[in-house]
Image (cartoon, rainbow, N blue to C red; front, top):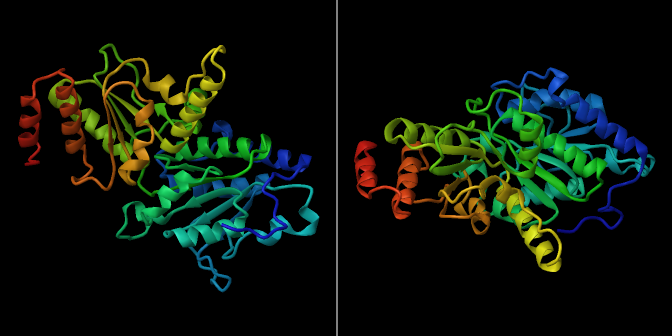
Length: 368
């Protein structure tokens, strides 16, 4: 991708940038009173937009990546009165000493459309796509090449939040990373419109920070040891939670449930830790976030994504014990019964229960 030569990929200096970022973060603070309980990621983001604009963010709605695109109303807070981008606002001569937080709301379903939008934004800011909410023949509403391309872009941090509370945590992390720490690049959030039914309470400070790092535990600790770990991103978190309930109710198997809004961030963090440890053999080893979360035992880990299997598979090399990645390109439907059977098969392969359990489960859930 090429951007015009006068665009700087480095954050622009200036105290106003930090003040605007702090104001936006304050507007998104848990105590701000935003009504996010049960809100889907898309609706929660629409609720946050007015507060972000008041905090100093530049919000642009990209209906189409086309200079002639008409201004169309969504009938919700995503309609911010902009059908073109924020190019003139960000790069006019008077703005050379400050950089306002930039939020793009788009429906880019194809890789060419997204790349054109990134040229418009100078590959900077927070790009939020609601392509998943539109009818499409592709998983999650986007061409399969798009998530794979995003995962390969080192200046992009892609997220697939499950709930409005996760969106809040990720936006705050993005504002801090891009505009306070002044790191280069952009964030990408895929947003769906399913009501939250897994996590509805505000995240604790620790869980919000962990969500920004890529994963946090949803299920509370219990007296019985967990026998399998189930990880889900976006819409798949609700499916994973339903599978955990089946395992508990039908098989008396305790499953830990983890939300993983960014498998890509987890994998990059783990790779960076491994490289640092290799270069500093005498120093205290760094522990990647995914290992801090999952290295406490060797129970099987099943990671689920609404994208292709390879997206969840990015963390496989950094997990102790048996690892299985499940995606939308699987031969079977990604459903709670199939995930329960997958968990039973993993336990059977580890010798933790008889193989007959798997055969019985296939018949019980009418999957044969």
